[in-house]
Amino acid sequence: MTADTIPREALELTDGRLRLRPWQDHDAMALFEAARESVTSVGRWLPWCHADYAPEDATAWIAHCRSGWQSGEHFAFPIFDVASGKLLGGAGFSQYDPLQRSANLGYWVRQSCQRQGVAVAAARLLAQFGFGQLGLVRIEIVVLPDNQSSRRTAEKTGAKFEAIARHRLWMHGQAHDAAVYGLVPQDLR
Image 1 (cartoon, helix red, strand yellow):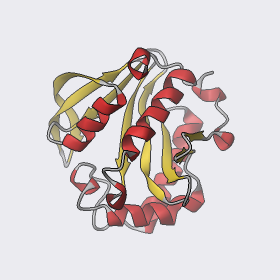
Image 2 (tube, rainbow, N blue to C red):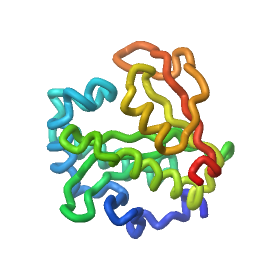
Image 3 (tube, one colour):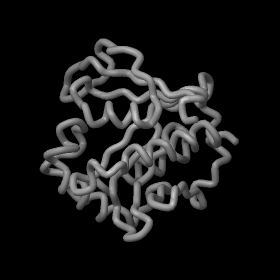
Image 4 (tube, rainbow, N blue to C red):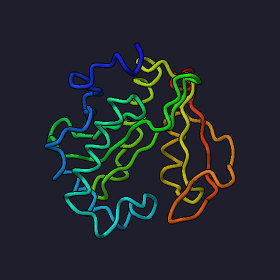
């Protein structure tokens, strides 16, 4: 199966605890609330999560995600708690390269739900989707070197630390070095 044949509206990934599916328009308020709650934790690492984040930002992000699915360029998912239906965070693939069969995997978890294994479980679900349905042979997780939580998540997912890549991330108007982790199908076993 390739990215252009994935039935977006019917897609759901679950492990019984978490449920991931493509973003939908009605998720905007939950995204806004999760982002505003998480400015001090998530905002430290992801510049989109800031004190001025507004409902319009959430709506624009969801439209961007829908467009990414349609173009096959990126695949973003909200992470929900199965039992409560609460939005716990988001995860997805960016920099999808069908020729090299690779993509970057990113994740974030709202502040009140951090340190509960949400990011690891979501990353594993997405890795299985990436290898199984997108046909990926390599997934990269790229984080700022001092983001210890994201680095631990990468390692617990099974990814292997490969390098500190110079000027790998662009944030706040400047280039930053980044820790690069590689995940291949056999790492999930």
